[in-house]
Image (cartoon, rainbow over all chains, first blue to last red):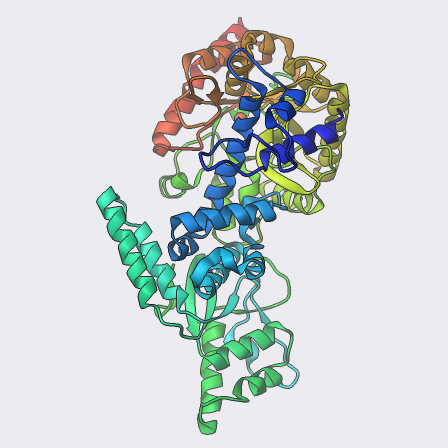
Amino acid sequence: MNLMSLQRQMTRAVMMPLTPREGMRRVSSNGRSMRAIAAAFIKPNDRLTSFDRLEIYNRQYWFRILSSLAEDFPGLRAVLGDSRFDLLAQAYLSARPSRSFTLRNLGSRLEGWLRKYPTCAGSRLKLALDMVRLEWAHIEAFDGKAELPLTAEDLVGADPSKLRLRLQPYIQLLDLRHPVDDLLLEFRNDRNTTFASNAFEELRKRKRLRAIARLKPTAIFLAVHRLDFSLYFRRLLREEFIILTQLRAGETLRRAVESAFRESSIAVAERPSCVQHWFQTWATLGWFCQADKNEIPSQIRIREDNEI
Amino acid sequence: MPANAFNNFTEYGIGIGLRSPHYHHILTRKPVVDWFEIISENFMIDGGRPLRILDQILEQYKVVQHGVSMYFGSAESANREHLRRLKELVRRTKTPWLTDHLCWGSVDGRYTHDLLPMPYTFEAAKITAQKIREVRDFLEVPIAVENVSSYAEFHVSEMTEWEFLTEVVERANCGILLDVNNIYVSSQNHNFNPSTYISEIPASRVAQIHIAGHSKYRKYILDTHDHPVIDPVWELYAQAIQRAGHTATLLEWDDSIPSFQEVHDEALKANKFLATESLAAAV
Ligand SMILES: [Fe+2]
């Protein structure tokens, strides 16, 4: 057996889902005995059979990736409940094994997969999808690239029909059907409480269920961004969201603003001052950037944002 | 004075792994530490807090990069995106040498995120050595490969683990990151004498040593890096130092991480052995 075929053989076994009792399956996906497969390429020793030895790696694989995904998506876990989340995680990771050298990217295809296999989320699909998008945005915003920010002065005198503003790459813009930002902040605050007896854990679960039950579908627009290297959620008006997404797509300032007000309820007379205020805030937050430069930290902290 | 051709960094002394629970302590108290080993993958990102912390550490400390996913032993070629990001980080840290494991973990672009054991064959040694050379040429930094702990052996193996390690590093002309805890763990799992392992490898290629604790189960030992170093591992360390000379040493502690001071104190126990070796060398 050459190196490549041995590695393919072992990877197939290692990535095979575990039994409900967290052991290696007795039979492979194509109906072959795993004992025979293991014995064909792995030596036994005086304490462990070939099967036992392969099983160590099979278990290690699943424990590592399942705990990594659970760590990245605590909100989804809370929305779905532990057992449904575990089933979903196993199904997702079986269907979409990691294609990146880093575990950071393990959840990168979760949203797309969940849209394709919606039944995995049960009755809370839309809420689950919102939470997945928010939690993935959180990962992207945490270590995304920051470029040299433009200041408010840089924008003075620019021609809006030609000006194309670049948005910081780390900023994530989301349009969501549920206020999952509040929900996630509530779960995270819970998680940060250090004592955890069984009774406390139970109480926490019930609290979460109540919070989810209370949650009414409400369209929200959100920016996940960072300041001083801390992450924040910032709620946006629909008009703000449109301007920012249009700018990110490469539209000129004038076109972006026109699209934002096409179906807006903001009175025409108020629009100029709104736009001016938004741009001032965004520039203060360091959201616009120059061409690819080294990361420069912003020293400003805005209080109205929700730090995560 | 370098102890050997692959060990130009004897002045590095004793380092510890840079782990997030200790960031605050390190940045506010600025403890005296010879050097920090970072896990490269944690910093192969585009921006944000981790890189900010790394830059602050780099202002005050020497840093050596240790990777967990280069998979020199994978039959497929190295991932270009991985290499690009790694090179960017090498430029940032100016790591004097770079380490990763003598193992595999990906096939056909799918990653297990584990350090899987090699079959000890000549074919595997050749492929692995070739990849080490390619990575070194691309990154332009000396490379040392680390022996992993393993729980399985393959029928196709044609040599012992230490013969395989020797075969690879000589073909690649690279250094060894000798993990004495991994040797101990594997010796228990595969019934060999760990002391033979240390006496058989080319000591002149040992560029760095890892020490760590592990977990013992009923039928096997897992390399968990969550305990203090046990006495038999210290004995192997003493033997390794005796053979390789004064060598940059690092304590790994990755799980159930205690206070910074506790980890550092455990690492500094290595001084006793390094001092003895220096005395012996002076006589
Ligand atoms: Fe190690």
